[in-house]
Length: 284
Image (cartoon, rainbow, N blue to C red; front, side):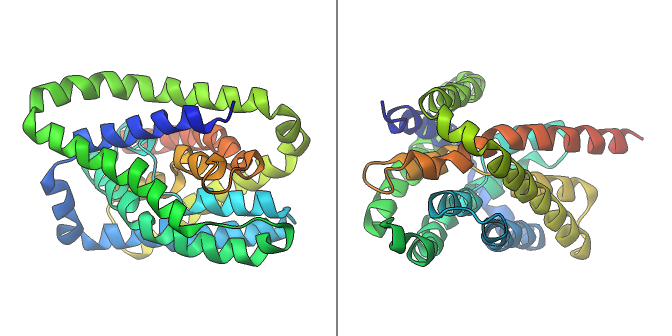
């Protein structure tokens, strides 16, 4: 069974739930807090893909893994970042805004970056990117559920709050189910490359944390904003990357999805110690 049939409903639920929690004033923070927004989006949309390209070259990744690594780096912030920001004592409202804005901006940036990377490393081995299909799928799975969630929130606020309470508790177990199924189906590929892919993904996340922290300090952000930006840049939407990689209308490749699956596991292991450290510092 193609994992696309599992990841599509999971991704749709995640984006719908994001829409349920959005307020129009959330988008107003783009204007009210431009420095934090600019720093976070620069780290997430510019530096992270460049770091992924550099690491893919450094680790001598084959084309499928190279493309998959850049794909996860190009993806928007994941909904888990909002939870991690809360745990770290960050600015949850800012985190929600960053997740929403990056989800919208990457509708444009993912096709641009991935079409170039695929042509660069994929054409020689027959990997191509149908950009039109990518745009259609992202609009259907990313933008539409968010828009429906916003409509539900404003039309039926009480029901939206009740739905959000349920979905926020089921999203992570659903993502674990997706990862488990993918591992079972592709354990030979994963275990055969876990050393190089795992190390590369860890390097990607640590580099993202370091760059986001440095940019935040240079930009003079407050501690609560720095924590939020670091988490947002360090946690990408793995479900979207897996959906793009395994979609029969786009890459239709389990191999390209491997970096995103490994990333979805490793990011929690790396970010949890960071959350514990910043929580301890904020208490002291």
